[in-house]
Image (cartoon, rainbow, N blue to C red; front, top):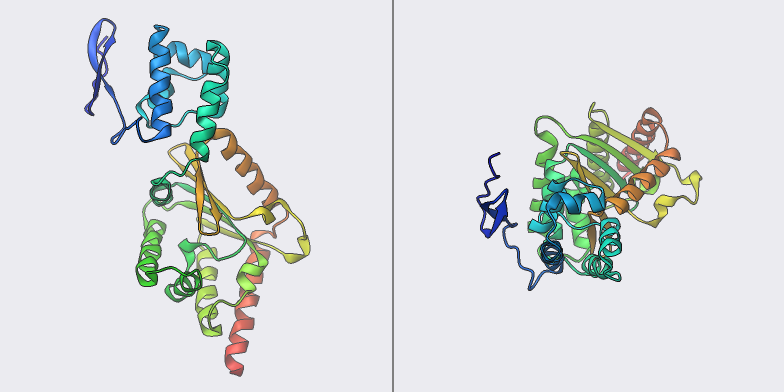
Length: 296
C-alpha cells in the first residue's frame, strides 16, 4: 500500500514502516495558539501510548481522518471527543479543560473564517432580530447601519459588505432560508426613500427560487429567537454558526453547539408565517413606506 503524501511542512512519521511527512495547517503554532496546542498535545499523548490514528478514532467513535485533521490543526477537537479521551487515558479532564479554554479565547481569524464560509456555503440559514441581513442590504441601508454603529471607516466597510453579495450570484446558487423579526422590516432606517429601495430589494430576493424569506410576526410574543441573531453556514457537509453580538460576535464550530442552533432555527420557523404570507407582509410594508414618501 502506498503511503499518503503531504506537501506542507511538517514532521517525519512512520506509515507501515516507511517515512512520510505529517501535514500541518499553514501557520500552525502551538506556542501562541491554544487550539494548536490542543492539537499538538493530542499528537503527543497518542504517540506516548504508541497508538495509531485509527485507534484514537475508535476511542472517540470517529474515523482516523478526523483525528489526523485535528492533529494537523485543520479541525478543532470537540468537547464530546475531549471527554472520551480524558476518560480512556485517565487524564482527569485535561482535554476537556483545554477545549473549554480554547473556545473561551478570542480567535483573531474567526471573522475571516466566517466570511470565507459565507462566500462558499451551499446553504445558509439566517435569523435576524435587529437588522436586515448584510447579504441583502442596499448600499444606502448598509451605510446607515454602519454609520450608527460607529465604524471608523464607513465607506470601506460598506464596500466590503457589498462585495460579500457576490456570493449570491455564483453558480450553483446557494440555498438560503431567512427568518426575520417583523420589526426588522418595519423599523425605519434612514429616510423613507431609503426604506422603499431596501424593501424593494428584499421583495425581489424573496421571489427568487433559491431564497425563502419568512416573517416572525410580533403577535408571537416570547420565543427562543429573542435571545439574538445567528447564521448557520453549511459548506461541503461541514457547518459553522456565526452568532451576532454588539461590537463583534463569535464563530461556533463545535458540532454539539451547532446542532443546538439548528434546533433553535427550526423552533423559530415553527412560529414564523408561511412563505407567501410573509411575502405579503413585505409588500404591504413596502407600500406603507411608499405612501409615506408620497405624502412628503
